Length: 636
Image (cartoon, rainbow, N blue to C red; front, side, top):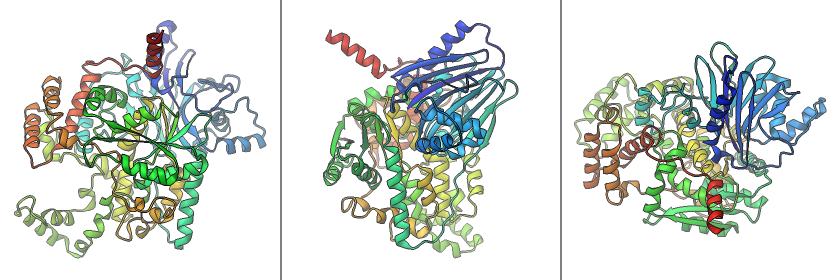
């Protein structure tokens, strides 16, 4: 796993020493992504910086990688799980290889197929290839967006990086906040791609490529998109397909020359991954975290699961003091404001795991692919409204507002009388459009969430409502929240995270599931649960989903209250946030009974992000290598 920086200048670089200093600074700032090696490349128009985390013995596969007598240079972050198979096919066609790296395989495939090469790659990746002869840059990101790819397309050139903070080192990239992005952040608790919180920086969307020459602007093309094709299949055959796909995926995801472990939260997804991994590696280490407050720890359940699987479980209890003290570092590593509090336990479990392993498997993506969220069953409960004419629905919805808030039936009627595209924004919906007007100083009613979701609903118009919800989540929540926190919190500790559920072959099976196989039998992930029944502990297949929960709503009433008040008052965000209204909301939350925890946390996260990146109130955290060096000095 690695991190890269790329600077494509339209005009030849006149001061190469100065450019080298800039390149080194941009690369050093993401040293946590690759503590094992640092290399650079420069020519008249191209600069590349690279940090490497050693996972597989590359045998002279250092990057930026040179290929075809130096015509091509490449930086690559990720893992290609079918590179051995592709390599063998290329050898049959006459290609020769000087290394055992997947990087060289990508370049050989690119030489053969050009831009079409990405369609054959199975894995997680973000890479950039520079063609010296044609003076063109070609970049790509994996189908699900597991690995990040930020870029700034300017009049002077194209700049790319694994993390946005590298691009913020450039004078040409301003730290001006995108007001539309801030509006969407208040809805989703993250900024939906391809935008970022900054006006000048974008992110390459999953399944897309980027091409840029020395003139003009970058061209974005899509090579893969999510497509569901439900098709009935004999029950036993379907379960066999699911098992075989996941068994194969876990097997290839465990290719490594360094220790591999697994996160274990106690739920079905991580349990399935750990169970399959333990068959390949019986001495598998698993890792779990929790909090002291009752109901916010899965440590006991994880240990029961680990005992059943006959693997060792290593756990850590997070204190509220640790939580607060590490928050600025967590925000710094997160790069973007992203208000999913589950990122915090991920940070701590990754830190614990890195003491023992370099690669860890996790269960991200299962819910989106196999239909795992309880909200996906909502269309079934609202099915009766499909028989009611639209004019009557409008009357019923209007009448429902007469019913006092909180009275049973009010929300049911409103949801049933609201079309799915207006009802479901995604897995996280923080502030409504009207509520944002109370907290944003520069509120603009034109910046509605529809600007994000409408195109996806149009693409998914032929699907049933549950599949539409999956489609929305895969294109927003999964890549904007789930995978962001997974990548950033593990990379913060130079730990490579691999997600076997988010594999092209696994998706090929999941995309064919019928509605009954997803949300049938009164549950979620119905077929997935049945496929692994007996392989995992009894009860784990129907255990309530927690996934490293965080007691934020409780802490904001007590332990974190003073901290929150101070952050609100000290943050220099007056031009963006109505602080008086935020303080009022915090007081209402403290007194109860209404829970405003997620809304408050969303605003607090933005304020803390602003302190870290705009106000520069905190210093850059030390890397693992710097911490180890300090420990060695102390010992001496």
